Image (cartoon, rainbow, N blue to C red; front, side, top):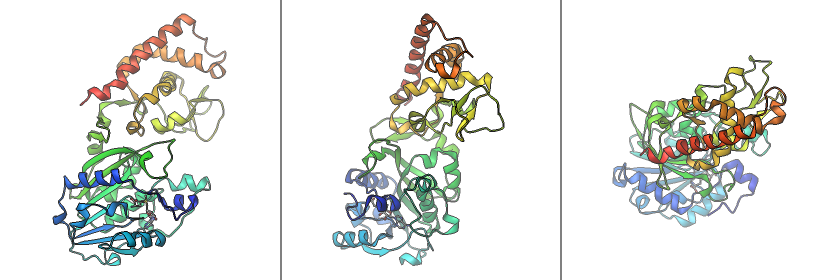
Length: 382
Ligand SMILES: C[S@@+](CC[C@H](N)C(=O)[O-])C[C@H]1O[C@@H](n2cnc3c(N)ncnc32)[C@H](O)[C@@H]1O
């Protein structure tokens, strides 16, 4: 069900994109693999909305269930639907403590949540989002979902079942922002689905979201654990980060002002999803321009040609960096360069001789074989 009582702007501010039934059900199936309801004293849903995550048998078997949200109209609607749940209005990011929710220090606590997420800074810049409420200083990050996970950590739950973007684990900067959380919690189960499944979510740019089950643990979760984790998608396929080598090891992905006066410029590369939407070689010296070191030009040509094949990768690999098979690339350097030079005559102009039709035809065939092999590898890696 979508948040009917909110305008589009309010929905965006609060991140009120509610969870559909199929995903709520999957979350509890996944959670049940790790912990049974009779091992829990209290279930807290700190961002409950209309209560999509309070449905089902698992929840009914827990002695005390608390649903909270900052949005009073949402909890008023939820109250009518769940007589066994105790509802509160609370900001999950301000003065976070067990006592605020009426939870005892020694209760075995489970947090179930689909917190608001998405990058605050970029959206504030674009004028869509403004800060709707106060956040404790030590929970402040550039993303409400990252802040929410840090808030859960403060409540010291024994288990957490949460929906969050896969990028929180895969992107080093996000993972580092989550360090206080990751120090205390071990990832036990993870299942990926497409953000397009959320009610009212954009159907244009799907990104991978995780049903993640964490358990309190002294060992926590390291980035190396994530790098080797086999991520399963709800559709049945799987991948690990470790199964590829990535372009980030061979070129600059981000603006590198010190290398001025290069002949060529490239647009910043974040991940595969961003590459699908962005440009590659550019002419203007903009803030997002990467200066290309000439001996690395072929790697940038590789990314430029990879972009043409990027749609063949499934949504759940959208947060990865561009994969490369370095050995085979070495044999195909000239093919990638020929294809890029032909594609961007305005960039390469008279600096590089355009390839002949015959060279182009051969390059195209070789590159096609290369990408078929590389992009099918994910399916054979199980
Ligand atoms: C993605 S929706 C999820 C709602 C519900 N859990 C579901 O799965 O359908 C996020 C919810 O978090 C609430 N929210 C946003 N900021 C909050 C805050 N600081 N404290 C508590 N709730 C907040 C929103 O009002 C919204 O209901």
